Length: 126
Figure 1 (spheres, rainbow, N blue to C red):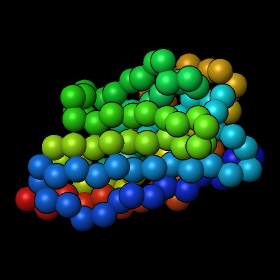
Figure 2 (tube, rainbow, N blue to C red; figure 1 turned 90 degrees about the vertical axis):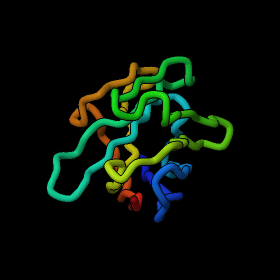
Figure 3 (tube, rainbow, N blue to C red; figure 1 turned 60 degrees about the horizontal axis):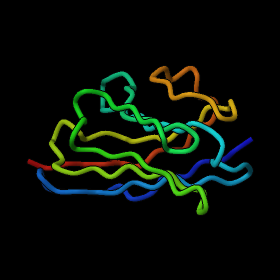
Figure 4 (cartoon, helix red, strand yellow; figure 1 turned 60 degrees about the vertical axis):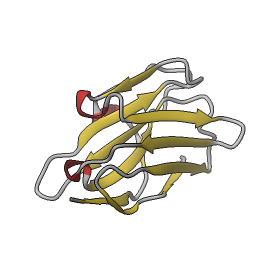
């Protein structure tokens, strides 16, 4: 079982940037697809971005395309979410999650992810 820990959240003004990190322990992230999801108050959890095991394939929800970039540093066992041009509607708790299929494809479906972090709060002020 892998334990995931997110970091890098905080309070930022609209138009600013943050970089979230997802670190793993107990099992490597290197061979597994990883995704970022978010949940705003009173809303359902939604898919944000995902990356396959080697970084060769990425996927983004339409509202963040061109602003967010997901990447991974397999040697450091980390996955990142670089968030630029942040908007107040990006305010949410951000979660990283991993799919337990080695060398698997990305997915937008949260039920396909079997390990989740505790989340990190991102607040964007207007």
